[in-house]
Amino acid sequence: MQLRSLLAKLDFVASSFQSLLLLAIRLYWGGSFALTGWGKLANLERTAGFFASLDLPLPKVSALLAGATECVGGGLLAVGLLARPAAVPLIFTMAVAYATAERAALQAITTDPDKFVTAAPFLFLFAAVLVLVFGPGRFALDALLFRGAPAKA
Image 1: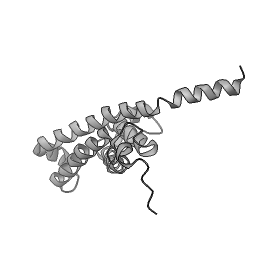
Image 2: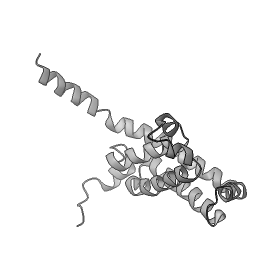
Image 3: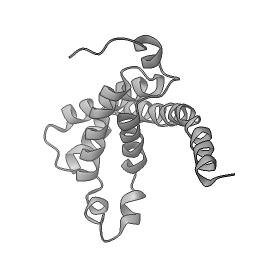
Image 4: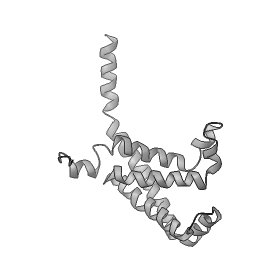
């Protein structure tokens, strides 16, 4: 069997799992985002106190925004509804988390990459970036509701 034919078959088999992988990522990390956001909202005073300790401006408002973004955005990500637009504020929220709560990990991105990738926001950020770049996959409400819809210019 030719190498080119073997590579084509491998590509076909591997790409057939793309939507399943995206579904697993969306369900797990979208659900985790939603639960984390709900935890922030349910414990707003404690979250605001933590945000105040990070010197974030308007800590209660910041806690509300972060919690709501994670809760609602995570839910949307999980079911694959408006998944790409929902990924954008989630990415921003994780970038803020790195810049504030995980500043040392962010600063160590080139000198100690393990510190960066083991910080709490990393997998949340990675999952949101994957959905933004690759979309939610076939097993998503976006695919069901907007399949074949003409693109608006």
